[in-house]
Length: 289
Image (tube, rainbow, N blue to C red; front, side, top):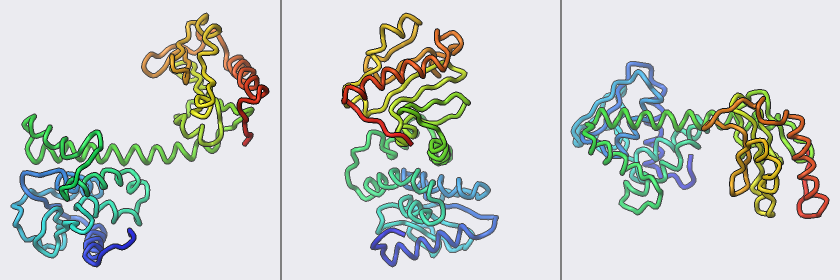
């Protein structure tokens, strides 16, 4: 639970946890003509309890049934408003912190955003959840339509975080030699996770082609893959002008890695020589893991 949690917030979180622990059938209630807090709160509850019925009721409804949890409503002993937090959605996300850390991490920024906008404060985020609801309504979607869209976003956000958590663990098993990591077994690991393990260069061989990526640390030192352009362009590779990636094929433009002009060992060999030349010049240091 968050620091300095008010007694009202604690009671609402306990109410939420009690509802989560209740067996089906369950109901989720929120007000008619949903706003962002109402629809994303209901969506999160529906992701957690997929079989629960969703009800859209008058904002002054009193919800007393123990099998129903009302979000962004104020009346009744089964209602959650999250006033001290800033939003009902924010309260639900806080309530999940002790139960499901990946879910909490996935939604905490959205929760912070709704805590601001639902309290009337400004929000500088590029995509504001409240604006999404307005856009959906402009398309002619009603409460049910907005709810379905919000549920897709919440479910997708959570799934992405769970996948990212697995990727971080997988990255720890990737061997790094002379600052270079190689992935050729079809593993889907983000380059950022590999670089966080200490790699300076990531070489991939996959069903979409060959690629070389370098770390932000190298970029800041002025080391860029554009230095290899004369070698790579002869083999019809694309070298990004910013110098952080070079590839023969990608998910956006798949190619056969067997036609890249190099085998995997050859790529590792020339990027190792290239990287070590910068190490020997004293420009950078690499760390074995």
